Image (cartoon, rainbow, N blue to C red; front, top):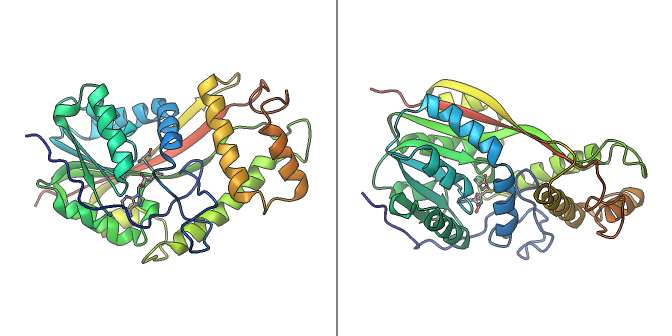
Length: 315
Ligand SMILES: C[S@@+](CC[C@H](N)C(=O)[O-])C[C@H]1O[C@@H](n2cnc3c(N)ncnc32)[C@H](O)[C@@H]1O
């Protein structure tokens, strides 16, 4: 059965975070928050990031493939530009994949990608606000994946309950949340005060808390994912973490990701950083500087993302 393509819900005020997650740009939407994101504007970064992280996603999906046998319908909730949705289509050749997101322009990219990769006949998109938009699905899902999207929803507990509601009996909910902050830089760069990336991580953690607090309907929640999945009526909770290890010397693609991520950090935290760290970041981002990330030989990408799964009981 081919999936319908819904375009009816235009995106409204979505919010989102940083490098591992997609960084806010300083301009916001006039509410004076530094935590609002223009998701469509983030498209190239989200796409490039997911492509770079493909080896990590492939490991995660291959693990899921052992947990979930022959899913008929896979829903990628908060799919963004559909890089991971298309990996699902590849890893599960018998499944239909529905990419769901609040951003129409990102889903356009997802459809174009699915077409290019030959998955169009079993690939659909649904545009609208999560989790409510899932009510528009014609069928319950055998696998719902929410990759780094749940933390953009104000009430994560309610969202998990809504996701669980849309699962078929025996279906699996898998969320990618948490892990470790990504690392790109040696602790000591040979100039500036050592430990820049740890200081940036601390700023990001504060930003993340502000981002969550600014979300519409924000509810504070203990992020015990297994407990939240159980509270949604699901069983057999499991967690596994997956590593992306791209050691130095970095490929051009990895280098571009590092530069784009640091550029976004410079944008968001430039005014918060002390003058020395800001000067170091400027130097790192200067394409002409041999000590910058465009040229130096010792930059790398090391990241870990956690996947938490649970199963809907068969009544
Ligand atoms: C960090 S991106 C993750 C994209 C993709 N899952 C990945 O891992 O590459 C978060 C995605 O969630 C979507 N999103 C955020 N808030 C949303 C909401 N309230 N309703 C629907 N989608 C939302 C954004 O448009 C964005 O595509």
